Image (cartoon, rainbow, N blue to C red; front, top):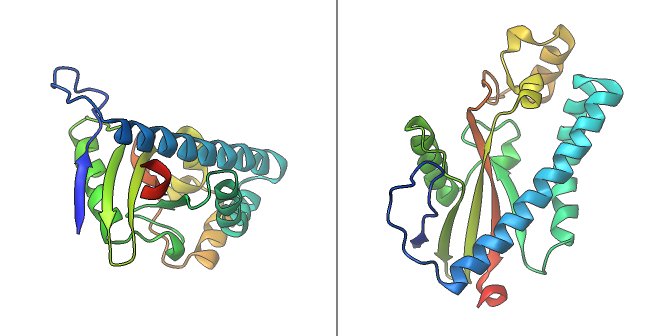
Length: 195
C-alpha cells in the first residue's frame, strides 16, 4: 500500500497554501535531490563528452552499455541502502520500465506538465511485506542535447536511426520536443536512514 505523504509545491503554484514540511520530509527531499542531481550531473558529463568525441552513434552505445553502470557507480557515492533508477512511460531500455508506483508518479508528472504546472519533485512513503522506505522522484524534461537521440527520427542521421532500430527494436523514446516531460529519476531511501 502506498501512502502519499507529501506533494512538494509546483513551480507555478505560488498562490497555493503550503503546509510546513516535517523534518523527515525535509531529509527525504534533501537526500533525494542530492542523489538525483549527482546522477544527472554524472550522466550529462559523460554523455556530452561521448557526443563530442565520436558523435551520436557512439553516445547511443555509451548510454546502452554504460548508463546502468554509471547509475550503480553513483549509488556507491551515497549512503548505504540508497538506490537510484531512471524510468519513463516511453522508455528505451526495458530495464528502465516503470513499476506500479512509478507509473502513478509518471501520470502525475504528465498531468501537471499538460497543465503547465511543472512539478519539481514528488515523494512517496511505501510499505511492503519486507520493508518500509521513501521514494523521491525528480522529473526530467527534454533539453536540446536530448533531441540528438530522442527527437524526431527524420532529423537523425541514417546511421543513428539504424543503430536505434538494432539496439532498441521496441524503442518508445523518440519524437520529443524541447521542454517535454521525458521521465524521472527515482531515489529509494530506507526509512532507517531518515528516521
